[in-house]
Image (cartoon, rainbow over all chains, first blue to last red; front, side, top):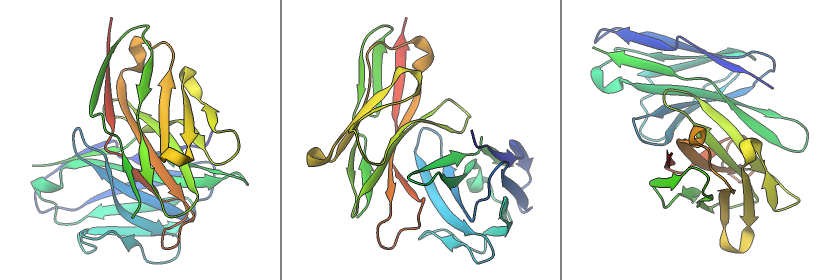
Length: 117
Length: 117
C-alpha cells in the first residue's frame, strides 16, 4: 500500500526556536496534503490544507505566520513551527489522499511528537 | 455543517466478546465514511471505508461496518474482540461537498477501547 513518511518522529526544541517537520508521499504523488494536530486523548484537529504550487489553506484560528506550510513538490510538504512555545507541544500528523478511480484513501504519516522546553 | 459524533468516549469489553462502536455523521453531500484505528504514539491505520454499493463493509482485522443512510450512522462491529484490538478508534466522513477540499476528512472525537483478558 501507499506510504506517507514524516521526519522527524520526535523533536525537542527550546522556546523561541523554529522546527521543521517533513511529510513525504513515498510512492504516489500528492497535490494535496493535510496537517493535523492532536492533543493527548483527543481527536485530530485539522490545521491546514497544503496545496502543491500554491498557498496553504488554514483553518480558522490557526496562525498562518506561526505554522508555515510549504508544498514544494508533488511528494513533499513541510510544516515549520516558528518561534515555538511550550503550548505548541503536541503530536503533529500529516496525511495525503490518493484516488484509485472510484474511491480514495487517506494515508497518514506516523506523526511527529514535538516538545518545546 | 459537517460533523461526526462518536458518543462513547471509552468502552471496555472482555476478550472474546462482541463489539460495536457507534458513529453518527452530518454531511451536506454524499458521504464517504471511514474508520481508523490508532495505537498510542502512532499514526492512523484504515480499518475500512464506504463509498458506495453494499452498505455492509468488511475491513481488516475482522472488523465490519454498516452504513445506514436513514440513521446517518456508520457503526463499527467485531464479533469477537482480541486483546490486541485495544486502541483508539476514529470515525471520519469526507466527500465532495461544496466548499470542502476533496480528500478532507472530518473526524469524531474517538472511542478508546480497553480489552480485559
